[in-house]
Amino acid sequence: MDPFEAIADPVRRRLLEQLAGGPARVVDLAAEHAVSRPAISKHLRLLGEAGLVTAEDRGRERHYRLAADGLAPVRRWLGELDERAPRRPAPPVPEAALDGLELEVRRTTRERSDTRRAPSTPQEETA
Image 1 (cartoon, rainbow, N blue to C red):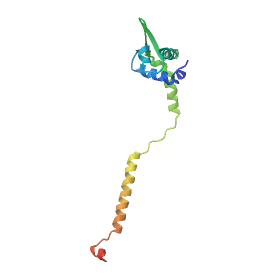
Image 2: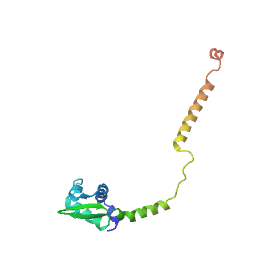
Image 3: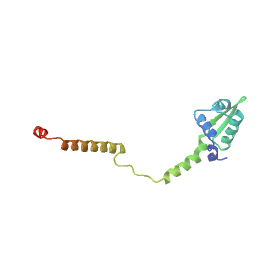
Image 4: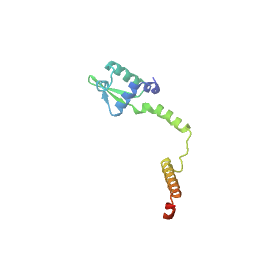
């Protein structure tokens, strides 16, 4: 199994996330899933075949550890996608600043409009 097939399954992705926090036993990993321990063991075996985890026997227990090098093909592929993706130039002014400018223009326009409608002298008010 290749790493892409391995990470296609949500249970296996979650197992990888758990193992990113450090080595763990099958029983500990299975405790956080709604599937049986044998099912978790099968997922871990597939992750091992893909080179994403390693297992170490300690007495009767098997401890699994994330094998970060196994993700290299995925990282490489994502890097290639990123390099090919078109880049949009960043606007010279942040959009939030433009929103603030728009608000200020509307406020100023409204104030000028109100000033033009209001009488300029007390004599005009009584007329």
